Length: 190
Image (cartoon, rainbow, N blue to C red; front, side, top):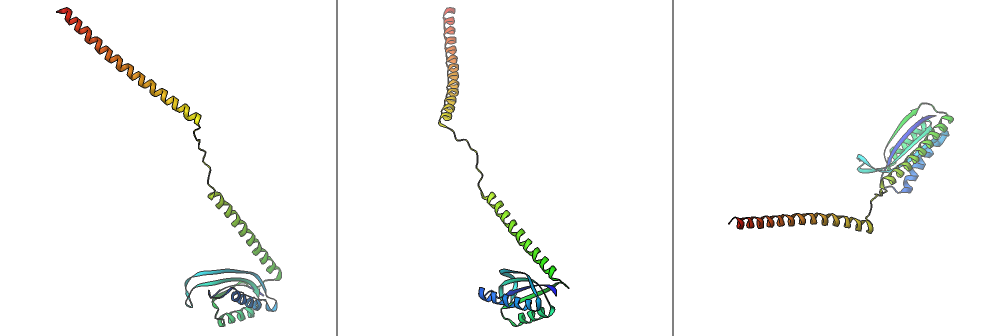
């Protein structure tokens, strides 16, 4: 047996049942004469880079398997005949694979699935942390603090106003007193 990977693109107009029927018939061909499917991933409907058979989208299916070359030829013959398969590509991964090698490959595949799920959960947690609004610590003034601040500002303003008024009155008084002294001195001189 040899190890292969096949990606095939199905028409986007197929129903889920029709997609499943094509996948099952393909797997039946692969598993004849002792072949084994290592992994099967339905990637789903995706936009194509260019039109294939006048379609802009396709349903992607990826299959990793171990089988005889004759089974691969039969599968590709079926793909060429089937109108629901728009395009396919098969790549030989290994010239020879044993049953132990198939089990090891399945274990790697399962480990990759678990790692991907854990990474997805971690990414979701990070996303939640980023979305959670941070609580800003702001001090809202209490009525008592507001009253004290108002009293202090009022006190400062009152003191400043009193000082200015005192200076002004002192200035006026000094000016008046100087004027009176000057008048009296002028009278005395006369």
